[in-house]
Image 1 (tube, rainbow, N blue to C red):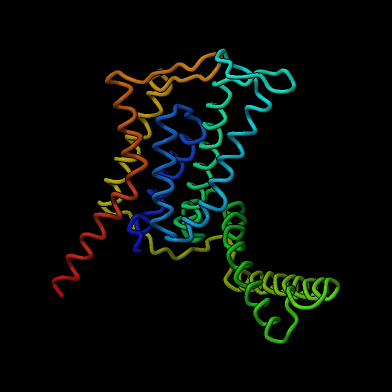
Image 2 (cartoon, one colour; image 1 turned 60 degrees about the horizontal axis):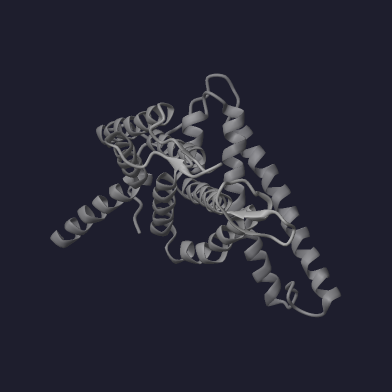
Length: 296
């Protein structure tokens, strides 16, 4: 699928992910958690397709269940006692609900970070922070780039070793260990050699010299300004509403919080509009693209 949202200015992408990730880790209201989790997972599926579904089934769902079950075993706060454990500690409804909320918050943050890693490439990160924090932005961008390159290179090395019968899955236990050590040794050698080549390339291009300029393909258009204004307004309205107690919610000692009222519902709608903005942009982009294709 074509990700139209990733084609926006890096400032738009960064503002969106900064707002959604911060709100996902700070707002514990069940409605906010449900909105953020659903939108994050839907956007992840749009970007990664079946890979996101497999990742959700193999990793996110077990983590959700495990976290929801572990919390009541150690947290016994709450006024609604459902049963007593063998240790004599109470099993409360509030601890179960809080465990589910904590698991949803963790999975939501991970989902948004996976989308962030797909959209915010290293060139976008350096464009935004290269002048303010050049050293840190370079380290972060190289670290984000290193993980996919490391995975691709180790897959290539393993495939080459498998062709000559030296894969980590061939032979006995001792032989597999030797093959695995050989693959790791080749990988470390490649990483060190690649680091030397990168350093020489950066030195040859004058990195760190005073007055050095950098080429950029990003330009702030009217479309980006509209998106910045919309995302910024949503973030400001949600942050103000949370500070004023419009999204107040608690799990202990009893479950209580803001559910109805025009102001609270408007905050829910603003949060939904914020989290859905990438999908809405992509859907409109797909519609325009199909309309253009139909005219050809």
